Amino acid sequence: MDAAALWQRYQEWLYYHEGLGFYLDISRVRFDSALVAALQPKFAQAFESMAALEGGAIANPDENRMVGHYWLRNPDLSPNPAIKAEIVETLEKIQTFVSQVHSGNIRPPSAPKFTDILSIGIGGSALGPQFVAEALAPDSPPLVIHFIDNSDPAGIDRILHRLRERLATTLVIVISKSGGTPEPRNGTLEVQAAFAAQDLSFASRAIAITGDDSKLDRQAKSEGWIATFPMADWVGGRTSELSAVGLLPAALQGIDIQALLDGAKEMDIATRIPSLKENPAALLALSWYAATNGRGEKDMVVLPYKDSLLLFSRYLQQLVMESLGKEKDLAGNVVYQGIAVYGNKGSTDQHAYVQQLREGVPNFFATFIEVLEDRSGKSPEIEPGVTAGDYLSGFLQGTRQALAENQRDTITVTIPQVNPRTVGALIALYERAVGLYAFLVNINAYHQPGVEAGKKAAAAILKLQQEAIAVLRAESNPITLSVLADKVGVPNEVEAIYKILRHLQANQRGVVLQGNLAKPGDLTVSLT
Image (cartoon, rainbow, N blue to C red; front, side, top):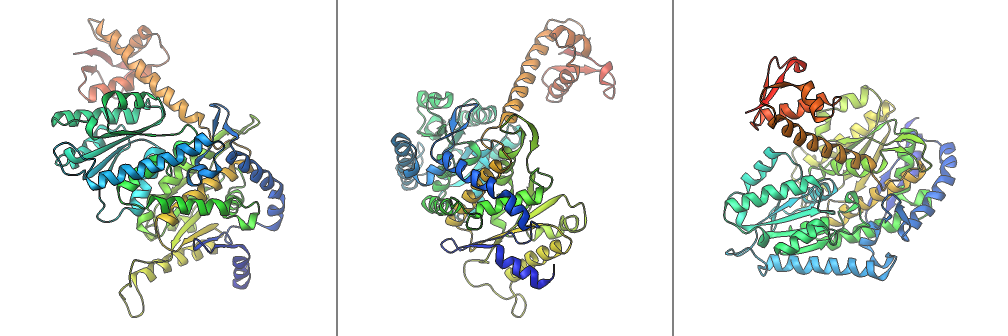
């Protein structure tokens, strides 16, 4: 396609939202009018299905749950007065609580004010708050945030080491809907031990964000934690950033959470329009369908050309992959759907993997996130008439052109600046795009049986560990791994037992493996 034709296509498919100063360019995705026409009936049904979800239809039949993250930024859409009241009251509670923390009316014992936040969560309870903190936290926030988002002991130690001199003035936020998720529970236990080691009261510095009457909710109330905030049943982890999960830590850092909500609300209005060309989320869904043949045949590479948006690709990994990665469609057919997401940032990508993107395996489509404003205030020239921001913009345009020349599909999302309103809009845009795309390919975006399967498998391994140790305690002599597996009653799980014991030995947990480590089948094991 020549330059004139490309310019015409650009104008035909460019979307612009005046209120948000937002652009979406899908002109460099190679779809034709025949595909658009073929998808129109599916889009019509998708718009109807999305409207039903917002009206309170059950979205997750496995758990009889509604999907209500859209109500968080417009409580008037709530399907009943009780949910509306919960949203409004939670936002008021957050604002009041944050004001009291900032003023010092809520403060740690024997200290003037809290200085730091330690957020303990996993998945959406960490990725959203991390993304927003990186994107929007001021250089000198009222409270500096830190995250424990894994069960890695060394990672936990690293965070606690950073806070060792300020642990007394650290506000801990524990986030878990059920209160039984292992990672936040483990992190909480480790942090409680760290507080105890310094003779500090944990409860007087702790907050819970959790489901009503969950295990964590009961614990927080019985131990006298500072406060609890709700994690509604109708909000999934990957769409929880604009609930208390994300709003509370954001507000504590001095981020304008009302602007976040307003930006999301305005994007929701735009993405609710039942017309393909007037709806940016529908245009994204069309692009994803065209680029991946509706079957996830290509990966989504997310390239934000702004340092503060570095974590956007990680945030989208969960939102897109957990929502769309499904074995079966709504009819129960095996379809293996999904879109893999990865990314870095521009122009770092220029020196990392653009070489492969342009000339290697064409197994991806790229999404550029462009920010028009370079910095707050005027930029100095580094060359006559050229600023560093000009270079960054040039790298984006050059990479987009280089990819197009080799028939690599690209999407460009443009925002005027990185601020709470535009970040809220980006969150809302991709939440809706995921939902619409899922309806196009006939899958449920709002359940995740694969996640639950992984949790159950992990629990089974821990149970196997306890059973193996119990058998070894009763043995007076070393035994082979096969004999141990037989005595535990799992003769086909020798490999799992070997890996459990190898881990225990590496951490000096009383296990001794003897023999040639390169031949695990010949090893014997005993306890010290």
